[in-house]
Image (cartoon, rainbow, N blue to C red; front, side, top):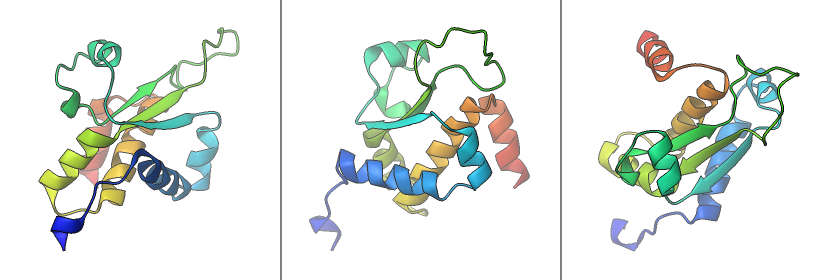
Amino acid sequence: MAANRVAPSLEEFEALAADAFAALPAQMRRLCEGLEIFVADFADAETLAAVSVDDPFELTGVYIGVDLSRKSVADPTPGPDRVVLYRRPILDEWADHGTITLGELVSHVLVHEIGHHFGLSDDDMHRIEDED
């Protein structure tokens, strides 16, 4: 019964993200060595400003770091590269969509942010999705 359902906790959402990552091809996971994956309810004000988003419900995930196409061994490393998935906006998108599972949506957002880690733009990824 839908009335008795509760939204997954941050920990349960982290498990969904871990499952989505584990399901990626081994070669893709190898290219993500050192990439940290986090889950938060919403992006903070600094992150929203950095990506020019006003409404925290509009940002489902973000990649923070230097993408692989621009990394150099000569560059100082300011910290680990990160993907952050935002639980509440993803839950809202899932509820609005209605035709995919929450796990599928988490996987989609994770792969999109990993695409940024690989150096792909949003336009690149939309083009790739349109080809499928």
